Image 1: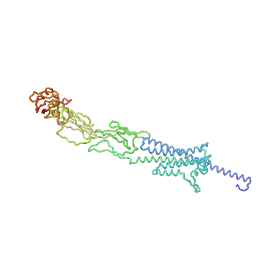
Image 2 (image 1 turned 60 degrees about the vertical axis):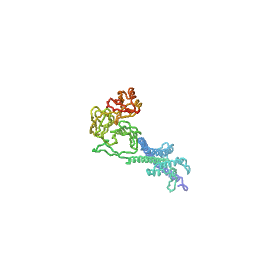
Image 3 (image 1 turned 90 degrees about the vertical axis):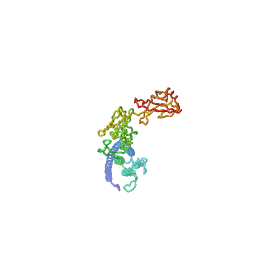
Image 4 (image 1 turned 90 degrees about the horizontal axis):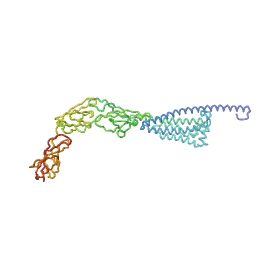
Length: 518
């Protein structure tokens, strides 16, 4: 149409054709621009929804980490890192997009976004990249590298494969099969709206990747938590002890033992006494390991509450368990049938219990019998020759048990007189006798009694008997002693003896004989 000499009319016709073709091209361009704009808006809307889901997930994970730190702290740390890497690239791209439409009055008027000037001038200078273009490439490469570093292949293999594909900046083949730089291939010479849409798609890939990684993290933890390797068997029974012939009605149940079931805290008591963490109990995995004394024989109750974290709140779980303590066998029961004896005038210690029944469920009675504590009693028999003691108890099932034993009552045996702590015939010097104390002892007696001598009779052969008050020779007795000859024996008899602090009358004390050695 442009060759040769044309008439004015032909030139006008040709010009009209050119204008018509240009108008058709312009209309087509506007439709394409609008299509890109609508696609960009749809991707943006989808990104908003994905961002909200990711934010909700992170909020929920923060609550779980607070409720169950041993289970979710490590996961939250990894999720925070993924979130930080993703948000850094997402925010950078959002800044590029905002700057690109900064001078456009109506960002929804896509038909005016037909120029390639903005990103061509931002990223390129001739055949080279500007600093901004290189920064864009570095940001995408850094995201891809960091995500590959923190995600292990064994768990996130499929996700890493998608990351390497979606965020690749390798050279791209054009329609002619020629290699072209990734940045030039995607952003050089494209209308503004097309470049914005591509950037929005990168943001979509970032958010989708983040969502998939976070979901897989939580799913992995939940699968580990639900594994039966984290369970052990427990025995539940309605009572702490059973008797021969009874039906055992306990049950075997599963109990969690991993860290995910560790309580946040515990408030426990043992028989009403508050237990302290670290001293009386510790947390080991999902267990509350007790470290308390089994206590006295009998039933003991552990009560209180375990507090678990759930959705940012504490969920109480009541504790009410009973265990039984029985006396440890440390000797055979051997009894001399004829030796059931208690002594009058002393406190006879006694142990009274019924096998299989806690001491707090056993009672005993008898004349002069007093309970000290647990299974320990004291017996102070009164007049008579025998005393009967009855022990009664209640089995856990309510059945009553009772039995009686009879004991003979005997008096304290007669003491034996002593001089200088020696008994029988004692050889000593005259001067030693003058200063020695007269005493008394109960030889081979099972009770430790403190005996006190209040007076005695002193006899030197051929001289009158001297009555002495106290436990040492008086002046009159010493005078008689001076008149005794060497080798002569003197006698201390009629020794008055009592038990210190007791009004019990003892039998006559045996005398002691002294042979003078000078």
